[in-house]
Amino acid sequence: MTIDELVQPLTAAQVETAIYSAMSGRGLTTSDWKPGAVVRTIVTALAIVLAALTVLIAFIAKSGFLEFAQDEWLDLVATHVYGTTRIQEAFATGIVRVTNTTGAGSFISVQPGDLVVKNAAGKTYRSTAVFSLAATPGVYADVPVRADEAGSASSTGANTITSFVTTFVGCSVTNAVALVGSDAEKNEALRARARAKTGVLSPNGPRDAYSYLARSAKRANGTAIGVTRVRCIPDGVGGIDVYVADADGVVTGTVGDEDTDLGIIDRDIQEQSTPLCITARLHSATTTTIGVNYELWVDSAIGLTEAELETAISAALAKYLGDVPIGGELLPAVDGGYVYRSAIAAAITSVVGLERLLRLDLTAPAGNTSISATQAPLLGSVSATIHLVSSLGVV
Image 1 (tube, one colour):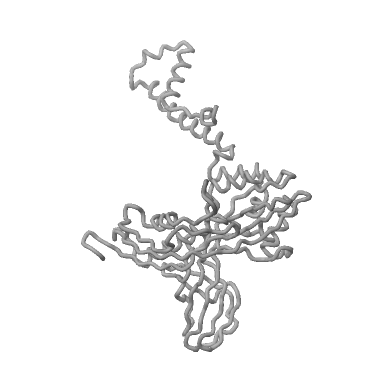
Image 2: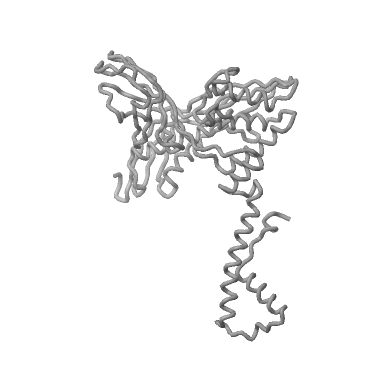
């Protein structure tokens, strides 16, 4: 018998029938009551309330199980039964290059937060470290930045951050690679990680344990490191190579240095999951960028400008490629992993919607992209031509 069969809520009609049956069992002749009689009205109202209560009871009963709990109820089960807490949304981070194009001005020891830049959609990104820029044409500084808005909505493609919010006279700015933020962990991802927690309890080092510890690792200040992709490759002679990546690709740090992200993950794996006589080797995955070139025709009724569409599509592509597993998508009967061209087209389409999409020409990538076993895909440069079309022609 399934959980659904065990905790089936009652309808108002079923409750009403049960009430009349109980009354009949007590000797009442309920058939003598006319429709609309006070007693019948009271029974109908009570049946509606009790039926709603059985829906709540069924929901609570299901919510005690990992596979059926949702949202806040799932948080309770994952936390109190599996010792696993939901990973919260993360800010998009990365590097922008600020170039002194004219030689005007001199920026020495610019403090964290004093540089604010934005993309075409108006999403803003703020510097997180001190930097300086001499008053010499062509001199540049690579500056770490973080989105002001958490979550995937502030993801942005390569070369899309091109404007300043704060004034930097005679300078230009751009980002060579995508910045990718992540939303709070989805229900199914939390379930999968909670199930993987049981692997940590085994003395035999199952790969679920490595995956769980890498994805759940936290810094000393309590913030999540943010690993979203893990691949375990056994060498067949008593060792296993564990490759990790976050939405932006490389996980920084050094194995053995517990003040760095990679060192923290390695410590947790060595202390909590690696059995005797097994050698676990932790690595950050390498990254491979995939450039996208497309031309798009969209119904102007979508209500967005070409620039807004281009920015939204770049963010969707960055998020999709940031979620592709290390080694690419592995399909049955297919040799090796790939990023599939059709999936990239689907990511573009998801922004526009089929009802507004008139035509999509995807010229790059020209085919499916092969991904090596230790690579994490990332979005490269995006070249887009977008046409807004109304019933009267091009807008």
